[in-house]
Length: 364
Ligand code: KG4
Ligand code: ZN
Image (cartoon, rainbow, N blue to C red; front, side, top):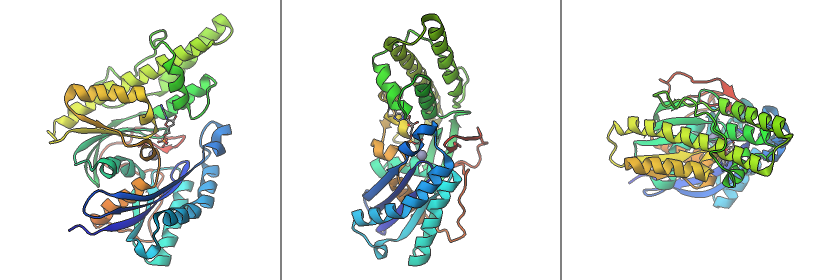
């Protein structure tokens, strides 16, 4: 019988300070608590996450977050089996806040310490929510990440491809800024797009003609800026309809690119003949209903099940870190006080790096 494990997880790699307690016995894992303190307001005036402000806010909030997660879960430190913490990749000041806090807790309580790769946290979420069996295909789409991963084991991931520049959430955020819409841009653009005509403006579908799983989103933003400027030059400004049509055309381009690249990624994944083929998405962009239905359609064509975890577990959270900690613990992994915080930490060490660090930290 599998040992029942109760693990406290800490996450602070970008702009969410989070702590959670997750327990797993023989059956499904149970989230006993999951606390997230977002920093959206703190950074809103700057048009992106300011690393120094983020790090300071994490350092201020992380212990409060831990106390709240423990209280909400109704557990004490003697009920825990380990402390798991995001040790990278991400904005280094933030990662350090979490790692230092976790080391302090481990040193004071004698609990084992487990460093978790943030991307593994996202990538293992379908096992926490749906008990997904390996191997499954994972599409990570957020403000900081964009990659296709085949998850074969809790430490065994193959990256099929990813963005060579911006992440899709970053593209949505920049588009919203160009059109004077509120941040975060994804939800604002989606709302506008609902009333728009996706065919009025034709945006490029970058890299769709290339037979690989790599993506590019930065050119889309430039195309949007050019089209906007052209309308402004011709008519002196944007009407509500212009804005809605721009959003609809922009969103449709992202839907088409993700659908097309997912078709390719699925073809590669299906070569392994998985018994229960599954595509899972994670990341804030997975909240977009046009993107979800585009992915669902592609899955239906190929007889692959589609799953998207609830949004609170798609976006950054510590339950996924605690759960990944459980999987690492079961695999015998233990870290000690020499655990390092890493700005970069690719999940698939055999794949070459696709890009440099982005606004929200390293993406691959
Ligand atoms: O996963 P997340 O909370 O944080 C990281 O980036 O790690 O994702 C946030 C991103 C933002 O860029 C936001 O604009 C985007 O997800 N997003 C969306 C939607 N909701 C959030 N993008 C498109 N459509 C949405 N409905
Ligand atoms: Zn993330």
